[in-house]
Image 1: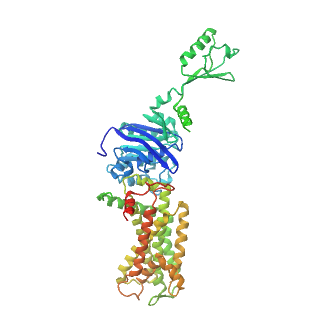
Image 2: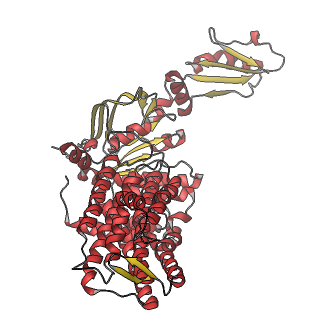
Image 3: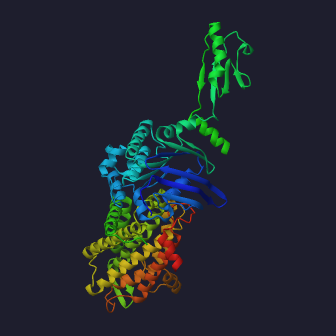
Length: 307
Length: 279
């Protein structure tokens, strides 16, 4: 049975998309459950938008199996389109209509749209309610895109870089909006360049590079992956030569201008002799830090490897 | 094919209304479609006052020929130029793609769009006629009026279809006005809109006869001529007009793209694809 309510909302098996000689998507598997906010992270040209557009029914897959709410998106059934919401990366609307008119017009085709005023308030366009689209700023235009995506009260929402071009406060408001949608058990697929956004919003993240998923998991576990390990840095105490310090064996030391740094997967054990030495000498290790890689570091490392 | 729903009529009405509001709020569009034909008519009829024009069967007053001929100009500008410019712009801005992601049937969007465009074109023509009747004493023959209305509707629909076909050849929206005007204006001159074709060189008539505009002008101006026999329906001209409309429609459907610069087999609605495969 199609369109049946189940816990798996998006399921993708070995998805491939070829444009001529280029394989934009080269075998992707995805499962997104009901109520989940899923982040698709990756550099430009990685295939994020292609994947999202296949799920939306805008593009056909070259190979693989795709199901969204039990539908085959490529068939583009009306019922399917009634139950999804799309916020495209770029999408025009009638320029001389007002914000209200546009939302009203686009939601007319849906069976149970949200009240227009509620949508306007949700995206924070109250002051622009009766202004023409052509008078909106870039960020306001993007919020209108968001409004059009949620106006139909969809079960699944596709957000393709929803906050690109937002100022920090507008971004924060959008995040709160996405949190509200999450609390309503909406399923959201989000693509983004912003690590902060993925970390803040996504329950699960997939990092995609060159058409393949190179890592998947919840944002914090991704960031804490072993590959990154920790970086220890401190300032070499005055009048002490590096060789006099009890540093761990076999690590690659970086030393310049008195700054010492090394990578380790066992920072506690490695630091113990150093800290003891400092305490005995009654000296302070200035600038001592242990840094765990951020999601951004992991992301850069992963996408570099794949490139 | 998706099942036709009752609410589709409501959607059709709403989208057509939105299109009409758009025209009304765009001063440039309102001027060129509504006001400019009237200005042209007033200038032309004022300079030609007292002259006569040769038409099939005899001579008529200057205004009696040029009111319907400029009337064709009025709906031709709206119905031919607007789809080229409007659809190319909607495609480039991503409006077509956005609509495709909603449950709105593309047929409803296109039909509402075309319907509103034809309505605007015919309103421009009607407005112009009212001015002409009052100011220049143009005569309306009631028995020819049904033919005039049918000719105007078929003519504007046919030009719309041809405009949609031409719009599929427009690569970038900013070239659309140039493409529209470069294809329209030479034909306006050749087709008897600004100069009657009675007594024109044979080659002009033969070239003009290939295109739909000459047939529209001929059929429409005949509906305002005292020498026209019968009900005024010009079968040969109407056949040419409908044929052009069908050709335009087929080309428009075959070449239709939802997105600028995207080559993808999912670009056409399924209904279009199955329609073409069957034929």
